[in-house]
Length: 487
Image (cartoon, rainbow, N blue to C red; front, side):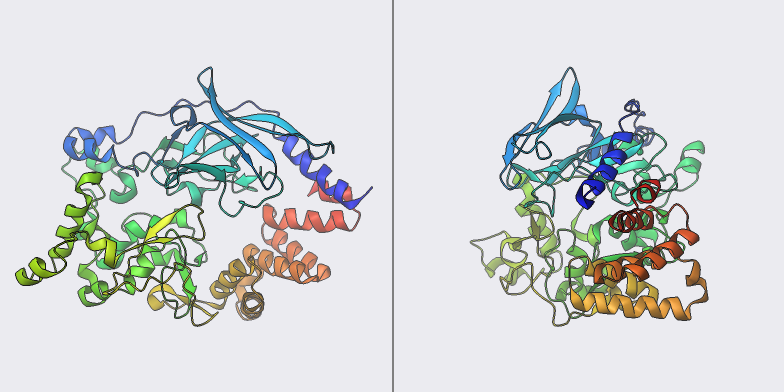
C-alpha cells in the first residue's frame, strides 16, 4: 500500500468516525446580561448594539450568503439557509475520483460580528471545526480562511479551541482531555462577549441586589486595568502560556502577564502586519510614552457603545483635543481636515488576515507611510513590556515562529528548549516542551529523536493529541499503519 494512500485512509477514518452522532442542541441560553439591564438599562441597550456583543451566535441567525469558486483549488462553495438551518456546500469536478468533491455540512454557530469578518463552526462527534472559508467585511468578499488563500485542497479540519472562543463568546466550556477542540456539548453557553468578561463574576453583585460591588476596571492598577482589554486585543508574534496557566485561566482583575507572556521581534518598528497589534504599536507612540499609565484603550474607546459612522471624525478629534488643547493649535492645525486619524493614524494593510486593514496606533507626528510589514532590526524575540521569560518560554515562542520556516527561529527554539529540558527539573514531565522538541526534530529529518520526544510527551500526558497525531504520521511513514490508526 502506498504511503499517500495510507495517510489518506487514516485521515478518512478519523473524519468519518466523527459523522456517527447528530449535531448537539442549538437551544441558546437566555442572555445572561439581561440581569444587568434592570439597573443599567441605557448601558445594556447601547452595548447590545456593539460588535463585541454580536461576536458570535446561532449560525442560522447570522447567515451571510456565499456563492463562489476558489480559483487555486477549483472548489465551488455555497453558504445558504435551508428550512431554517445554515449549510455550507462544496463541489469540485475532476476526472480523478480522489480529487472530486460533492458534499455539504450543517453549520451551528457563527464567529465574528461581521464588522471585520465572519466564519462558522460545525461539529463531528463532539469535535468542533471552523469552515474553510471566511467573509471579509472590509472588501465585502468571501474567500478562503486566513493562511489558506492559495490552498490546493480544502482545509476541512481547522480546530476550534477555548483560546479562540474566549474572545468571541461567553461561558466558554473547557476542552475534554485529548483534544483541544473536543467539548462535551456546545463549546460555549452564550453568543457574544458578556459583561463578566470585563467586570468579573457578578453572582454576589446580583444576589445582593447591587449592594456588593462588582469589579470596576477603572479602579484597578494600570497593568490589571489594561489586562482586561489585552486579554483579547493583544497578540504579539507569539503568545506562550506560563507554566500551569492558559489564556482561559485569566480572570478580570488578574495581571494577564502572570498567565501568558507575549513576544515580538526585537526592535520591531510598526504594527508588524498583524490585525491585533494595536497595543504593541501604541507602546511606540509619543502619546503613550509621555502620558504613561494615564493613556489606555478606554481613553479613546468606550467599550459600552459604538460610534456612529457620521460621528467618528468629530468624536475622535475631540479625543485628540482633550490633550492637544491649545486653542491656537486647534484652530490653525490643518483646519481644512478635521480627521486627525487620516494623517496620524492611517489605515495599513494586514498580513495575517487577508482583505483587512488596521489603524496604525503609533500615532506618528508625520505618518511614515511604512507598510504594516515593517521588519524588525533583528530576528531575535523580545517580550512585550520587557518582562523576564524562562528558557522554556523563549523556546516555545521560537518554536511557534519556526512553523513559518524561519531557520533562525528553529535554531533558537532547539537551543532554548534543550536548555530547559536539561536545567529545569520539572520540565521532564512537560508534555508541551517534548511535543515541540519532537516537532523540531521531525522537521529537521531526525525521525528517531522525534519519536523519542513524542513518546516522552505522551508519557507526561497520555492524552496529548498533537504528540499522538505527529507520532502516528511517523508510524504510518514507517509502514506501521495499524499503530498509526491506534494512535
